[in-house]
Amino acid sequence: MKALTLLVTLATLTWGSSMIGTVLDKTTKKPIPNAIIISGKNEYRTDSNGTFKVPKSPIIGARAIGYERKFYKSGGKIFLEPFQPKALYLSSFGATHGKIMGNAKDIIKNTEINALVIDIKMDRGQIAFATNNAIANKIGAQELILFKDIKKFTAELRKEGIYSIARIVTFKDTPLITAYPQWGVRKSDGSLFKDKEGLYWIDPSRKDAWNYMISIAEETAKAGFDEIQFDYVRFPDAKGVKFSVENTQAERVKAISGFLEAARTRLTPYNVFISADIFGYVSWHNADIEIGQRVDALSPYVDYLSPMLYPSGFNAGIPGHPDPVKANYEVVKQSLDKALEKSGTSPLAYRPWLQAFRDYAFDRRIYGAKEIREQIAASEAFGSCGWILWNPRNVYSSQGLN
Image (cartoon, rainbow, N blue to C red; front, side, top):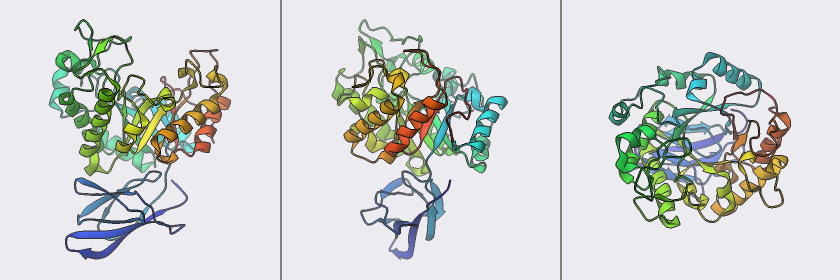
């Protein structure tokens, strides 16, 4: 957490019940437009001159893409350090396993890695910390509590200077659909849909099911995570499935963007960054590839989009590169370029997932220092706000890292 600092000058003058201020870059002294200020339960943005006017509040939150988040007492000068998360993914098991977490912290200590993405709501619907959520306790989502004190866990990460990202598996949830089958994705014959792993999916168009996921995310934000990351925030990529709405692109995109909008509203008071994982090929298509994800529709509701740019996952290659594992740099860079064209935002609004596991689709090559560095170089040439390494087995080394 180094380098430049962002200065938020909060005028001690007040106009009635409002507070005014200006967001400036401390080094360049230039105004920072579109920075986020949280007052009470509402989010405000700085204008093109970096200024804002918000209701007075004992505590306000401040953040901007590419910077840390902070809470401050009203008035005075506020400094936010720029920060780009360079993260490793850890499952709940890995994050609570002494040897695996110890290895991750050694890598953080000795390389550029400074952040962790950690499973909180897992792929099979289990919630990894003790929650007061009545539904979670009713449906058996608390059968495997791995974090005995989640607030202590996040506090320790913060003390060590580690940025924490909570991964919430959103619309894949077997325990919830087992208990509430009316919320499940259906097959054309009316029976519940199961994916290739034999897991049930929530129908994202069922707004009455949203509250459960958002409540878990809210409790996670309260626990002290810096960022909430929604994964599987999409419809299943399957044929012959039925939803509560007509299975059209318009309805699918409306459901996914609507969920993220609702989640952002609920999470606003916590001044927590919000991100969403998206398929890699979403960057290349104007349509939603039948899962409800379009970068132009999702980007207004998140701080960061995290496309999964594993070359092994590009089964059809990309234009000019039919064998993507031989074009690691090109896959990452060109995918990010395509996404940016569609969203019209900033490169800093992206933080891609990169491959740190052995290829499974092409030539079975090991992803070592060369392959990892090629992907990182592409992400950094694009200008993304950091990147995330994915290895489902949580096996990492310092290879390819500075």
